[in-house]
Image (tube, rainbow, N blue to C red; front, top):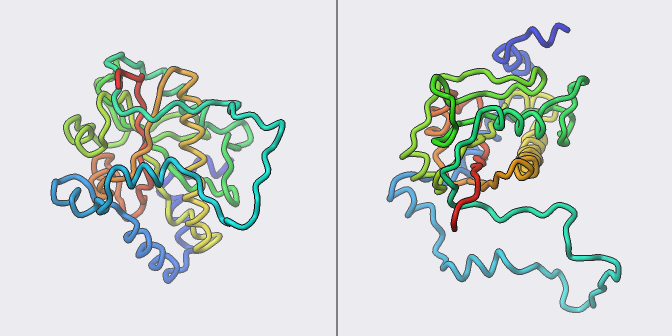
Length: 262
């Protein structure tokens, strides 16, 4: 088919023909406002809210009730056990080595396309505007000549990017020790908005959530835990991956590790 032969760069150029410049500017401005800076001590101090750990835990652990007037109804047949239990987010991985074949299997099973181009997760409007990049960490064995890879779900293959993994930088900024690998989710902005305009950006954010949940569930079957990380420098991440953050907007990072002692 013709679309298979079109390079990724040409696909971005193709979508660019139909993008409303005003809509793109508005979305870029909004996206810039949502960035949480991280990295240096100054950036971290500026980005942290004036809340105690107790305040934060209270917001995380309790449910929200909309009305104190109406009563509540409990389902008699509704059990508390989830069909699939999500492991706690990992903060420290074990030194156990992970081979590249396992990383490839997680990607293929979680976000790889079938013979009709359909993915295992929903995409608003079937745009599939999110690109996933694998960043191999210290515990990835048998890999010496590359460590940043872009996953292509239709061909189920990886293309090597001109990026690099910096152990000290990643462990300092992304706050997880001994990660086996990271997945960075990038929004292909031109592809996200050329059809649905501003709504496409919202659909792209939802798609990222579907993807990292799918990756989490599949990784667990391989004995891997994960942690979703949002406090990072977008420019630095894109640069470390060998990508241009003006074209591909970093959305979120997901770290994976064999669970260690917490």
